[in-house]
Image (tube, rainbow, N blue to C red):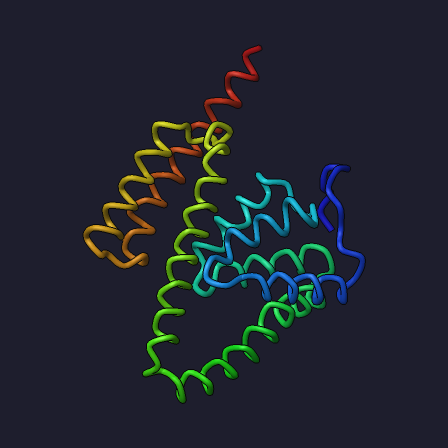
Length: 198
């Protein structure tokens, strides 16, 4: 198990992971990234913000739901495959049960105007949660190795490519990810050389 700073707490066992991710999944309506950051960093203190961002970044470049991948990574980090399985089951059991229940109910009441209005309200709420999560992540730009100007440039390229030109993420990822990787590598080598000269 990797060593974390002393201020970071650790889950007690696989049951703790399962129950914690079940509780997180019960809160994650629409904007699971915002809930995950608040739950894992602020409430449980299982991750520091930089570590959360690292794991979130890795989970975003892999296929599948980001927070599901992040939870499996965290479970594996502490208890190996058992922790990964506990995290996966914690994240999936309640949402799957709820989704099936809601689907059955929705099929019966889909044409009801009250139901339509409620769904529109939930969509607005989910959008707000995603924007809130993005704003909370912004202060960490300063510590990013690629630097603020390049970070903003990559953000703009991603937004324009996906948001305006409707490019798929599979095309945008190499477009943005490969230059970001080599730039970060260059900055790391540059920083190491400066430290060696001191």
